[in-house]
Length: 116
Length: 111
Image (cartoon, rainbow over all chains, first blue to last red; front, side):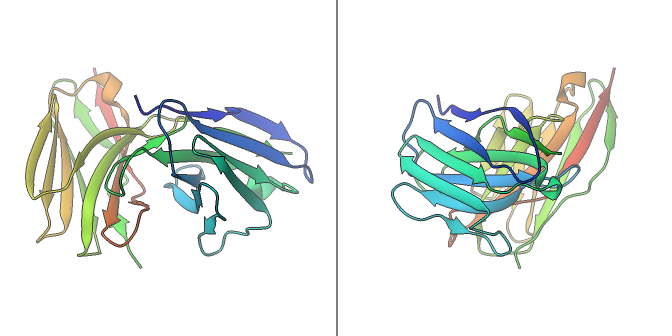
């Protein structure tokens, strides 16, 4: 149980274009989903917390107009990287919590974004 | 600022040995502690979580928590080459629903 599916697993796009990444909880309802970014040899950095039916909460330094998050249902959250630049190239990982705040996070398989 | 510190490694152990991974955290209010394994190019995979002081065992893995000293460790018994990965320590305090991750310790198990 507690499977989180993320799509696509990798994407290459040109500078200036937008990319959408989907995160789905397959066998549970996730009222809260989290988006992380990981650069090579670095730890996971939380970008934003996504709550179903409300606006996402962004971490300091993360541009909310550049990284659009939509959590339209209890099983789906999307991250759109708008006007992507090469410095946005990274590994983006979503996660979801199955139960209460104390429950561990389950991660999607991640999306490798390369902006050329 | 909440911090989670891990030795980046690599920690090299021979097959069959015990691997000991350590993590310290700065926030005394931290309540929940998690160990994730991450293979290169993959997303993290939950190994264990621990909430109370002491040891928690699950198969070859043992998590140890000492809140007074603000450290949490992960022991891997009978290490296998397939255990070679980066191990991330993550900490959550009572006031947050998010996790703070350490940078991870790379473990290399040689056959």
